[in-house]
Length: 293
View 1 (cartoon, rainbow, N blue to C red):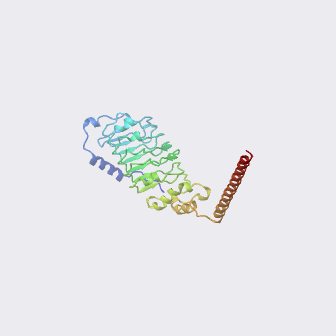
View 2 (view 1 turned 60 degrees about the vertical axis):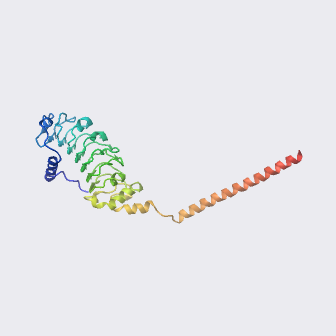
């Protein structure tokens, strides 16, 4: 799969059109001022990229629709500051030092359509992290070298999500439940991950094989382990893994069950015989005592 392209000029024009259509002109009070080392314009764009910021910019206009904080050293997205920007449609946090995000991070961003978390240091995505983002259309989450765990319900609630790129992370497996809950998904990026293709990945491989039309270049989505599967495409392994992981019984399986069954039957028979002999001896002993008395 090839890397999904950066937003084109046409895409940005569409974003600006959304900004114009989705809201009325804000009052001067909402657009007054701008954070230090950021540039805010009358198009409701706050440009803070490449300013060596170590913290999320404060004092941004509340009506901001597009916020770009890429290429800084920000390690946290404070929920309190971010959620004041309830009209955000476009948020670019790429190439920072973000280590974690949670559901509260985006708790009030119900209009957000584009989110870029690429080139950070995320390690896991927890349950319903993006659930508040009911308008999310595109999510880029590539090139987080420590990202190895995505909760099966990480994208629960994102029914509008159409483009999801998780290329070049450290995912060895991905629960298919996190994908089947996305009814609008039409483009998925998974290439460049050290994916493991065994019985634990059977459902994922089967889903990829059936939904391969959603991949920009499924030829680059390959297995890294086990050794027998290295370099194999996920899109061609679904049926093979299903057959290998759910084999029917062969000759040795039947022989094994026959031997085990015989042993259990014999043990039961011997136990019943011993119990019977024991009961007879006990009865004989009781009668002998009665006669003596």
